[in-house]
Structures are given as structure tokens and as C-alpha cells.
Amino acid sequence: MVDEHYAVGEFTARLQGWSQERRFVVVRERVREDKAAVGRKLIDVPGYTFRVWVTNRLDAGLELWRDYNQRACVEQRIEELKNDLSAQGFCTQNFWATEAAFLAVLFTFNLLSLYQQQVSPQQGYRQPATLRTAVFVCGAILGRSGRQVVLHLSASWGGLAKHKPLLEAVLGWRDSTAPKLVPPEDQVACAPCRI
Image (cartoon, rainbow, N blue to C red; front, side, top):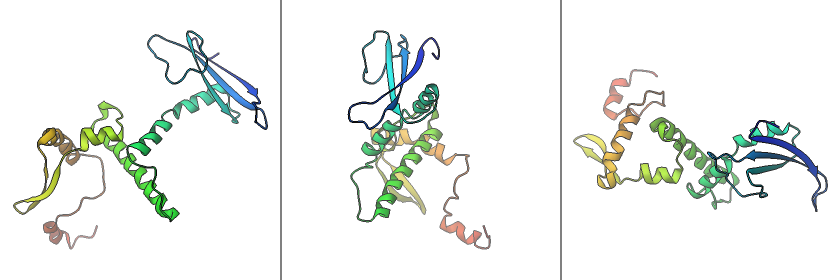
């Protein structure tokens, strides 16, 4: 028994087709009114939900449950990589090229996560597809204003008004980042400096 809401138990069983017995860890949770049960029902016992793990680990049932609970969103993240960032279905003849493409997708996912944490931490996690439609969709074209290179953002769909605070937050970001590109007119002044 863990507390008044949760109980942990275990048993071993050898199912048909298995070469040996396996360890089953079971967590029984008393259904609370403020917390709805998620997922499929294993068995129907009014007032309780059950979770079962088949494992070869020797840790105590409570430790296994806590460890697996920390990984609960991994499957969801894999689905986001496949569906939102197209991390499935590409395969090149060279293994290293396929790995590089996959790592580029993971890098993009991590950059999107960092972007969310820095720009809008109060909103919590948003999926890449949500970011694409809610934050990044805006027509833009690189152009000039006098001699200065500028990025012209579309004013339709709330583009400019919606993106201006984000751009100002990025430009005013105080955390250390990689050095910015030096504009061509400043390169002459910095030429004698060795960095």
C-alpha cells in the first residue's frame, strides 16, 4: 500500500507462448472526482483504475511506477515528431545521411521547445503543429529600407501585430547566445580586433 489513493502490487506469470515467467507490476488508483482516468480500461472495477507493467527490472514496484510515470509523454513526443515534423518515411541509401536528417528533425524539435520556454513560458507546452499555425505562419520577404536590409512581415492574419512583440522579445533577449553576424559596414572597424 502506498497511500489512501494508490496501491502497488506484483505477481509473476507465464503466458501462452512465453518461454519463461515474467514480472507484472500493478498500480491500483482510487478514482478521485477532480481527476479523470485516461487511457483504456484494463478491467472494470467501479471507483478504481489499474495500470500494469510487464518488466524484467528488479526495482521495487513503487520505484518502477515513479520511473515509468516520468516517461509518460515520450510516446506523445514521438507522435509529434512523426506527424508535425515529418520524422518518418524518409530513408536515404546512406545510413549516415538518414541519421543526419533525423538528428536535424530532433534539433528542430529541441529548438522549438527552447523557443517556447523563452518567449511564452506562461502558456505551457504547445505542439509543433500548434506553433506553426499560431506563431510562425506569416508571409515575409527580405528587402531594403534605404541601405538597411529588413524583413517585411505580412500585416494580414494579424501577422505584424501578432509577431512584433515576439520579435522585440527575441531582440531584447538577455541570455547568452552565439555571436551575431557583424554587418558589413562594421567589419572594417572591427578588422584589427582579434576575437
